[in-house]
Amino acid sequence: MRTMKRVVIVASGQSYRTGDFVRAAELLQVEAVVATDVTPPVPGPQLRVDLDDPESAARDIVSLTPVPDAVVAIDDQGVEVAARATRDLGLVHNPVAAVEATRDKNLMRRLLAEAGVPQPRFASAGTGKVAGVAAEIGFPAVVKPTGLSASRGVVRVDGAAAARRAESRIRAMLAAAELVADQPLLVEEYLPGNELVVEGLLVNGGLEPLALIDKPDPLEGPFFEETLLVTPSRLPDATQEASIRLARAGAEALGLQHGPVHAEVRVSPGGEVKMLEVAARSIGGLCGRALSFGLLGESLEVMVLRSALGMPTRDTTPSRPATGVLMLPIPATGILTGIEGIEDVLAMESVDDVTQTIAAGRRVEALPEGDRYLGFVFAGGANPESVEATLREAGAALTVVIDGEEMRKPVLPGD
Image (cartoon, rainbow, N blue to C red):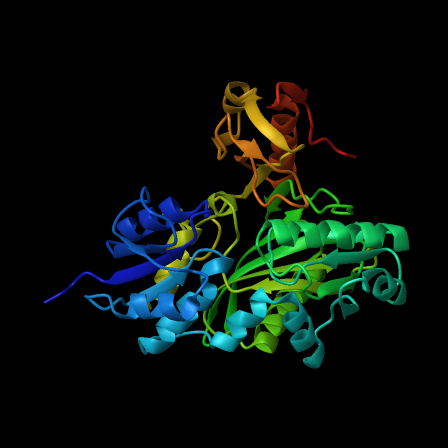
């Protein structure tokens, strides 16, 4: 008789977090099988699946013996696979149509609009139509492909000429990635203000917030390269509460019912909150390592697996007063020579860790075409202000070298 529960972790070959989820399963004494689109090495037992064919991948998962007790997707590429597999296994699941909506920005915007969820004005633009649609929306505007994440292909345009250039660049990027180059692009109203992340878990449609995370650096374009994330949020309580309500409304509008939810909102200078996106997964990259919960310091991945397996989530209060992460952006396209100053940063008080995620000698690609980060710096402290200061100091101490050229990009106030 099988006593150990079994979870399938759906992870693309590009995922940063496969190892973190496998370790979380080990801590919970749960057997983990990684369903992925790459050959080894990945940690633990593996099932090779085609993530570009969610129906086939779900069938492969359902056919496993012993039967899984839960299926969890790490990143966007796996959410539809997980929804189909959990449905076919008779497990608690999100509707497939709901997770499909999180992967299609046009569809997401339409569903949010139908539900009256506050969001930017938007319209779809076919080939050669982006400049005209953007003019109707009003400049500045934001142009983006409908099915990519991590700010890939997202461009702010301030006029018709910039809109035409952005359309050409995005379509060339889609063609290079062997995606549909002439797909309709999404054109949105540019919203000034700060961004806030609402990280939570859905249980029977109810949202349990786990963390509200500030993005202290302004994301104004032309490309939306994230750098700092700090929690807890320093925005007014009323703004935080409004953001949680908006995340809950966004998830409901899409039909999401269960599992992790990652919502991003914009807060205008006047305090108005509008929805940017809702994802049926937890926060991307290695940013989840900045979060821990309860007296035991359980990781975000442990919390996600607990919820998926029907285990009690225990204490969801943060285990530390304040934490944050600095994502190391790629400043230029070329061959990464190295990152200088890592040892100096590791020696800094309050820095928890530095993880370089792209090895020297590899080709790197900057936004808007790229979708990777060079690495992550993690820090903790007594309050968000001290964490932010530590991460900015760390950013100033690092030098990225690409094609032998030093590219110092400090993360300092006012940049």
